[in-house]
Amino acid sequence: MIQKAVVLSTGDEITTGKVVDTNANYLSDKLAEIGIDLVAVITVGDVPDRLEWAWRTAIGLGDVVISTGGIGPTADDLTTETVARLAGVKLWRDEASVEQMKRLFASFSRPMPENNLKQAMFPEGAEVIVNPLGTAPGFRMPLTLDGHTSNLIVMPGVPREMKPMMENSVIPWINANRGTDKVYAVRTFQTFGMSESALDEAVIGLIKPEEAKVSFRASFPQISIRIRVEGQPGEVERRADELAKRVLGKISEFVYAEGETTMEDVVGELFVEKNLTLAVAESCTGGLIGHRITNVPGCSRYFLGDLVTYSNDAKGGVLGVSAKTLETHGAVSEECVAEMAAGARKRTGASVAVATSGIAGPDGGTPDKPVGTVCIALSSNDQSVTRRYQFRGTRDWVKLITSQVALDWLRRYAIGLPIGDSALFRR
Image (cartoon, rainbow, N blue to C red; front, side, top):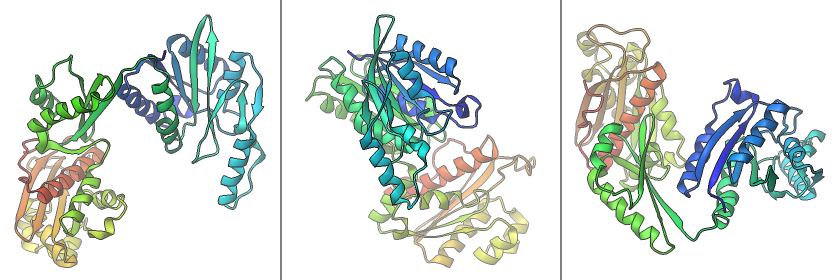
């Protein structure tokens, strides 16, 4: 029966801070969704005795240990050897994995280095987990230490390889071996425009503790609400849908997506659906809004261009912002962004344009316009909206929150919600 889990992240790049361990965050979320109690997350460097300690500790705590990292081709990739040593078994070579590696290298028109064969070696008794996107297959095996048996699941540390393996192979296996007929249904909503405390206040009392577990996760710049329902097959999905409707009935204006969909994904879907075209004029965000929009496949169907006009001369020459506006109100003003947005529409022929100008910091602020002052405008055939905001945080945070607000304005415009009415961040 699998009830408790431990996540084990290995690699000197994590313990030295050179790489942020996003794998542990992802795995924690996935385990919570299927009702597995995460006992601990252990992070350890590529040192043999520390790795052995970490594995012994994890095995003693969990019914399943999910490890990421340490199965590459280099000398400091020690996970497989450590597991084999703890199990007291030899390594064996999986020829199917060797052939998969050769095909992968051939598709790149590159010879396969000899040391990659190390990645096809597994402890005796291990079952291979195929990695369709990389050269490091994972494996699964039971291991008993000090009378306690734990199921070990070893995967690569590269997120784009690990995540499909987790979702397609590991989660189904865990669900099949949980030892209970209860199942879980999860509804996750991405929100923007309300603080975490305000969201909690808005939904408190809507769902009783015995009906579901409700949790919040603030992941700048959005906050997610997750509803997890436990029950019998056939009823759990219906109950989850009913509870989700309760929550949406209270905060639907601030929910922009369900699941892991991004704000830019939503904007793209809406602009295609509404047959709208988009242009962006950016100053303080320096192209970030356009970058996020062009991360969405198929954005060429609605996105016409991004005019990054950082200097006053560029604002005037490219977008047609008047010298009088810049002299009287300054580049960071509602008057300036209104003309920037209108100029972007005129230049590109877009039906909608959004513009940003601000002081991202850490320098450049004044008593009247401190660091974090940002002005945003939206221009369309039927309206022109401007707002001034006061953001706080580092330069990259100010740029990111500005891009999120601008994208939210586009979302709101496309579905007919009031633009910029949220009191959050308003000066």
